[in-house]
Length: 319
Image 1: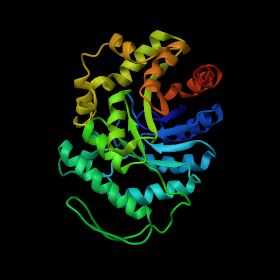
Image 2: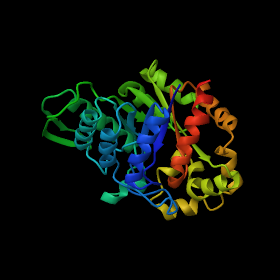
Image 3: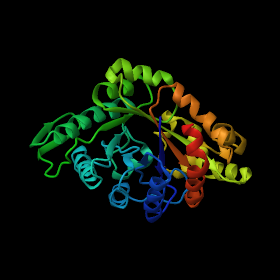
């Protein structure tokens, strides 16, 4: 399993994210994933820079670490033709180190362009159509498309990287797994559920990479780690069916009002116990994930986390 680092736009200033990416590469993380939000999940996180500008800066500031969106929604806030252009550009700027991670999105980020938030079945239809458009543009040449949800009028990508940008798709159930298995180059998930991988295989994903993400809250003071995790990540336990529907940070605050610090500590490794983090990764290994991105909670804690990871955590995980 390759161990990655999460550049979380919701909890860090864009300039800090570039700095953190450079540090993560130097520390030995093998890849970095970046969230793509218009809002933070909770007000306490306090940030939400434009991921694609940050990715361009990170691509130039680093040289070896692989990069990936985790994830971009190509159905509302961005038109798929524009997503294809952005992905191709980052592929060039990173010298073929970029993977385009896609997903059906969250109301939290997509409602800003108006038009209402479509139901899950419609969103999946839109994702299928969006991937078809993006893949056609990656093929080169002019693309025209008249679909149920999108139109493309004589579009072409004039700057394509030497290597085709891989496409990953976030999954949460049988329908999205089937789409990913057929149309994507890799599967993305936020829970170590072996059934997701099995459904991905059945849809045609056998042998393709699986990328997961696991939050942790490192701190030499475990109580401080729990307090920070509760303040900034108590939304995490809502599950994807809930998290994709809520419209803004106040809604996530209300939905998580009864989540206690103990609840968070039971689900997220908190403190500086290396063995606890290693144990938490085992379900991901057992579920067949090939990549796991660690997400340290708290923007101002990133330098200390990266230093600890280089010194203790990464060697322990690799051993």
